[in-house]
Length: 410
Ligand code: ASP
Image (cartoon, rainbow, N blue to C red; front, side, top):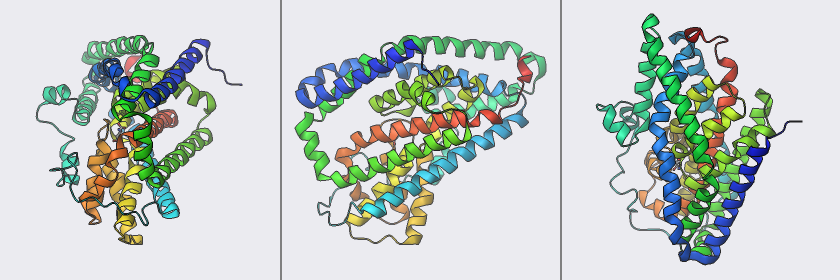
């Protein structure tokens, strides 16, 4: 029988307690809980502080540990295949539940204005996503936590490093060491997760006006929320099943990852959760090379929850406007939602903006976003949890594709 260690257990229980206490006190005490927002922000900032040094160290140390660039090719293709296939499955599940439940049928409150959150962003398109891979200024990208170009730079840097012979040893050791230090810091930070997650959740519910206000918001679009959460739950289970089928992991892996999953729920950000996701996956025994390679990239591009959510949201808007989405339109939603999710950053509510790509592709009014805006912060937490779970399952499944020996470090 798989067992989870005593210390892990204590922390999992404490985090669970923190999350539940956060929901209950935010619900009951409402705006009074705004007073704990700063504690949540402190925890969030501590996690964010880790992101850039951790990603740089992890990606460079991860890629160089694979050996030469040809080996990177095999792991890289397996990883990209996993990201794409699971994201596509997520969209299919989303389309399935939204067609089944039809939450938008008969909904009347159509909004007239383009919400501020997405105003001026209507031009966002695929070219922008491709352009966002490269930055003219790596320092400014890092300073603004633009992760995609930073990762691309690190991948190129690491690939080049594997080709310069013995001169690379000092540099590789430096990044290996840096990675270990960052992981040590994560252990320290994790101790504060229960209080941090409590404050993040209680503060957010407090800001939203407490239980009654939220209940009213949720009831207004209750069917829609139910459809999104049902789809996300099904996809979560689907990922669990492929984890069990294609690796020797299962329940224990899930339990070990719980701390990261709760942090994802609390922060609504895959990127901010990344340090914990990496730490938990390593604790669960996943090969460090897989963790360092799959998770930082996954936190930035692999967003199953976001893709599923975008497909449901777009179909919901179409249903509410009484616009029929036939098979060809749904095929367009399938492709664009998969790609738009790749373009979404791992930060709160990023999916709302890239959803414009999907809406534009099937000629739906951008104003439709106004109907779902009020509950987006809430659904964001669920989809972020699924995003992080998708990355974590990926790290476990990619393990067998790693080269057997670490040629550069022997
Ligand atoms: N908040 C999500 C994440 O960080 C992205 C989104 O769907 O808005 O993973």
